[in-house]
Image (tube, rainbow, N blue to C red; front, side, top):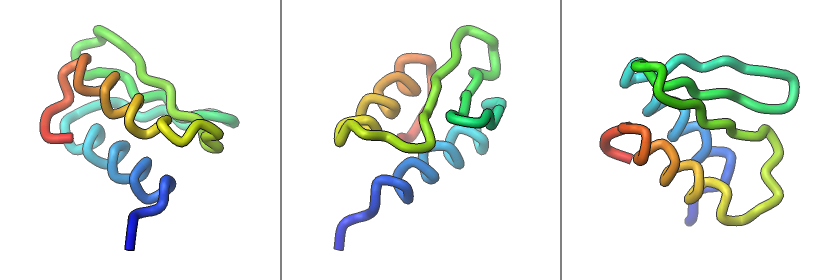
Length: 68
């Protein structure tokens, strides 16, 4: 059984929180702010693109998140 998109999104957010990222939940999205202040990754509550989680994972890696 494959993971749902929402479960995968939740795991990415939890991994970021575990590594000290600041999580700011807004009305339509969630902002993940890197611990060193070098960048922000925005995750929308309702993703319409089937590659959204892969793209989020890539952005997080580029900003230094380990192990995702």
